[in-house]
Length: 282
Image 1 (cartoon, rainbow, N blue to C red):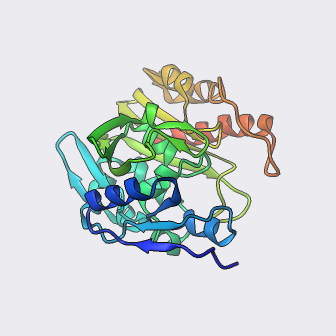
Image 2 (image 1 turned 120 degrees about the vertical axis):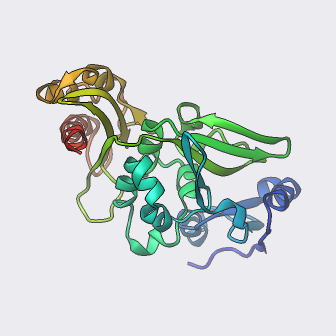
């Protein structure tokens, strides 16, 4: 289907984009990589009067070392994230998850910030960002503010980004030397995960000193498996299975054609055991 007619603008700066958003309000939609917006437009599930394309704003691209974190520009494509030595060294969990994200074509068009701003609970990047304690830099007419991952994901397809604001960058605290693994369960290759687990682990000899675990598609937002994290602190490798059994505690997974809530809760435990074990082994 062909999208409904709309006006098109391609600003060259964040300030220009914010001005257009202020001018057109609810009549405008933001275009990043387009992997979520374009299908919606084609199916005419939304018919904005204006589309504001961010692809000419060079300041929104790139990956930099900012001391105790790495900063990923919101318009950085997934392929660049996947190929980045900085990400691989300091935020390996992001690299692992990005390697499972869709296919090569989408990874060369879709953007890191666009996927996170879309806030699909079945998306592959929300749980790793949550597990790593990412900070989201949001700019609006009154300046810039930073929101932690715990507060960024609000509900299904809803984030802390205001209607007159843009996500400009994501700062990921360095987890240098931590083992990482992303375990994703699908029926068909490149499908949205039925359930996935993002795990990163810091070892102290044969003991798990610290673990951070995020769950994909186990609620209306990405979820931290805090019960698992607490059980793993100071645990031996032989204790991983018992800790992983707590993965679904407090979650509210959906029921759909791919599986009901109880099935997803079972999967969460199994996948958490696999992910933590793999991360612990490095």
